[in-house]
Image 1 (cartoon, helix red, strand yellow):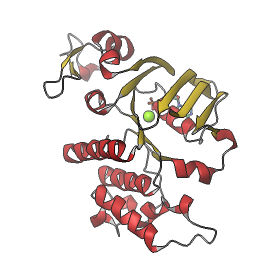
Image 2 (image 1 turned 180 degrees about the horizontal axis):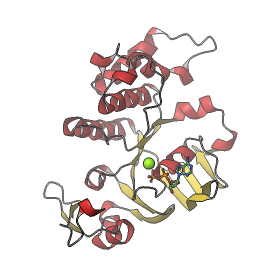
Image 3 (image 1 turned 30 degrees about the vertical axis):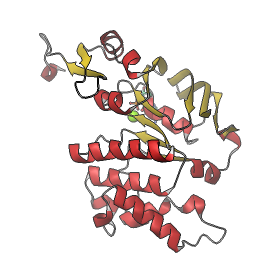
Length: 267
Ligand code: ADP
Ligand code: MG
């Protein structure tokens, strides 16, 4: 059964079309990767699914309900987002930020109970952020801040989590821990994960399916082996890569080819 249905979405920022005719379903418990070059529409797609941006055309439903008619609070109990750009957040303490994840669940009086603190603490344990609890978010490194925002999303106890390049600032230990955690929550608790990422190899290793975006349109969508091919990557990223089988799991793995002539420095 599909938990998210995206139907014929067009979205534009003034005169820039950022999404064109985007339709797909996400199955409950699926781990879906979203890849594509800078400016291909990944962040816009995530913000449209989270109801922050309203599409020009098309509909999105979560668990059969069109998000257009949903209250923010009701949507937030189902869907949590880890945003790409977290530098703008007010300078609250990390624990306060994580507790914000509980707000869609609080009762009329909006008091947090012991259970809310317990859930926040567990989320901080899972993301290795307990030691940051009383630090101000604006004084954390990019990776630390990202982990606090991941904790906030987990504290929200959503059924779907939307990740926007959530490993971009993480060191390899926390990258592996993060994808491992997401996969564990996905397998054990049926959490549905949509992850926009630049790391094609991580996406291949963890995702059930991958969507490749090009100029706001779905170029291809399918199993990692179907989407991550030399031809697709060359066509969409205009870059030559070698795709072979990862010796650990047989999944596709890309290697950048050494550039001929014009080096990266000349870009
Ligand atoms: P990605 O996350 O894949 O890098 P985005 O969704 O951020 O791509 O951007 C898609 C397109 O929309 C790009 O052409 C980008 O320049 C444009 N865009 C993004 N945000 C804005 C904005 N706030 N105003 C105008 N254009 C924007
Ligand atoms: Mg983006």
